Image 1 (tube, rainbow, N blue to C red):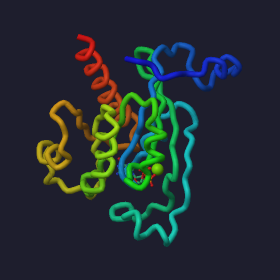
Image 2: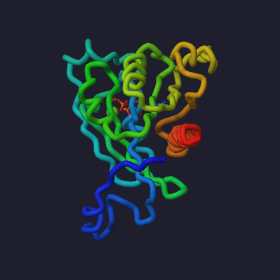
Image 3: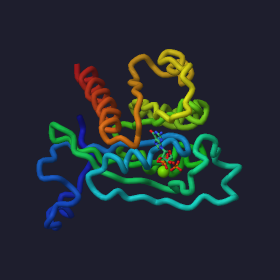
Length: 208
Ligand SMILES: Nc1nc2c(ncn2[C@@H]2O[C@H](COP(=O)(O)OP(=O)(O)OP(=O)(O)O)[C@@H](O)[C@H]2O)c(=O)[nH]1
Ligand SMILES: [Mg+2]
């Protein structure tokens, strides 16, 4: 797997090596993306081994007609730019996680944040499938390999089987789709591992 560029000088100057674990061999930039309120910030919070960086702003009356609060009525803040976290995986792979909104209106921000990423974990809320179309369009256009993590909310309809969902999202057969509870670190790590396995499998096929 190709490595994302890293800054060895800042790590060398930092006595506690906050920015890069000593054992790290593969530094990989990953996007965590998806529609409004799907759980991007929650997922990065749940897995990050450093204190995550967030750019949250309070939702205002003016945003009511812009971002659909259906299913996330209790939500009071939204990420306006980026979330950032880091997780070390077995095999000395370190993922740098960049959470970014997937709405079409964030396209230019999305392009900037996606620069240098090796893959994307796209969070989907099965209560609001069509809210994921923008982000899937952005990911497809960028050519980034991705995996889909279906976030499980308590009032999600049970009628969705895997195949109808894959069809509704128009996923390629090779694109991984896993279910996930973004509040649960183990479940979130499993979703990230599904993406990493997919990236490795693609690399292996392309290297042949
Ligand atoms: N049941 C359940 N609730 C979740 C899950 N993920 C997130 N939530 C809840 O959903 C709400 C929204 O989560 P956020 O992490 O703020 O979503 P976001 O995608 O970062 O939202 P924006 O940045 O505003 O687009 C929070 O109240 C979370 O606790 C999940 O997997 N399961
Ligand atoms: Mg957020």
